[in-house]
Length: 176
Length: 203
Image 1: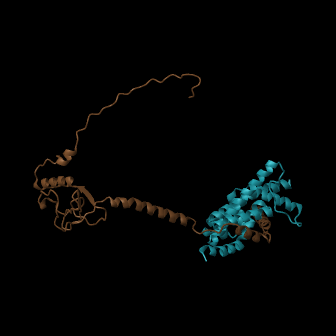
Image 2 (image 1 turned 30 degrees about the vertical axis):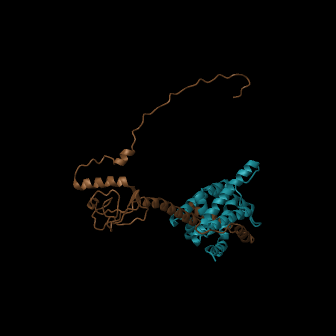
Image 3 (image 1 turned 135 degrees about the vertical axis):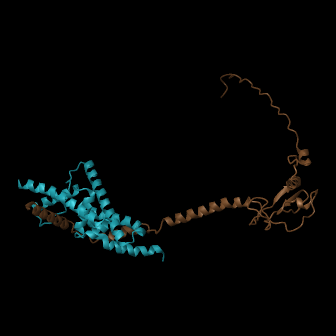
């Protein structure tokens, strides 16, 4: 049994542990289930090729989170360019697919929120998304991004402030 | 104050909204599809750079050996003279004319092999005529007899501290040397290029 044979079961373990994380990160950017799964699948394929360097659990999750986010951003840009070439009207911000229970007002609020999130710089955007996915476990977010906890806190604060300003403007506009 | 409360509500509302929106799971087939995709990938290689490193090391070692071996082979083999001199042709010099630490062994009449080995009694640092600490198993140096004669005379003169016409070549050499003849240079003849003769000619 060669050394490489030990990598297969380890990768399987990582796959089961991190599949939801990769999917949700991709979904936060693309807000389309099929696209998000395609991007997450591509990220796992890339992780598999470099797995001998990513056998540590924390390292694997951090690498996967960054790679998935980057691939999702690239996919989003590609989709927008294609839409622009095809001259198809596309909603700039695709909100998550609403459930039946959500009202029209909630749907509108959701559209504005995701539009504001898309407008954030990538560094603030990924922190916001990961904080939401990890239940605001800042220690886990800092491990995923390989950043100090203080930096994560600061970026989260900056992202919230920016989102609040955008949404406050929208709420004021609605109340007028 | 009211603004701060509004901000807190907005912030918590934002966080709640994002968390709810991202609380989605991949489809049940997602993991299976990833497995299928990974199965088509080549197996992850551990230390892909290892074969490159090993190859580079082997090439470096081979190049080093190829460079060092001829260099070591170019050194003269030296060993001490443990025997008295044997018969030699045209021996006119006494035995002490030979420099300490050197010896000779005659192998043929046409030429004589000079085999030198380190003389433990000789004092010296480096260079010819001083003690050596290693024996090089290289082919012996073959020296023509006439050249040996010249060296003998040179050493004898150094030992005797007498000026010697060292630059005088042996008679054999002098006899072999012919005066250079005058160089003759044929005059350059430049012939005119004939003009093209007609239409039928091809270039």
